[in-house]
Length: 200
Image (cartoon, rainbow, N blue to C red; front, side, top):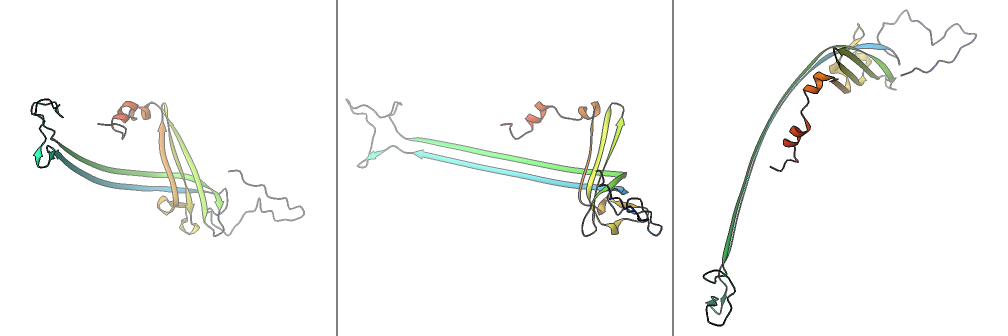
């Protein structure tokens, strides 16, 4: 982010654009200052779920009766109401449905190292918004490390560095591209068979 140009102070000795302080440390405090972020991220998550669903239906209809007598319609000259052998209108229907599902997820991430970031904004209360990116080209692929968030100047140590655990609203990403990254991506057909769109 480009810094705004300071107005010229013609006729004065002091200039805020080029001043040097001999009584302050080198900790970042202004827009454009650089500090080091120590990456100390370690995340462990575990989740287990199980679902069981069972449903049973049973329906039946007996032979209709008129004035207490069953309607069999076997008399000559009268058409039967059913086409089976016994001319019986009764029926029955049964259905059973069962579903068992289980899921288990275990995730462990660890990220360590250092990255230099710059101050892009100073808030009215003194907190600072930082942002930085590191790009590493290895063989035929690139590795991208990006970090952004908000820090308090009280958390910056004497070496002008801060732990990643002390960054609020942190947004951190570590991604890559190239043949190595493409080999670790599941194909679209494999993703379809394990997605919610798969009906079986």
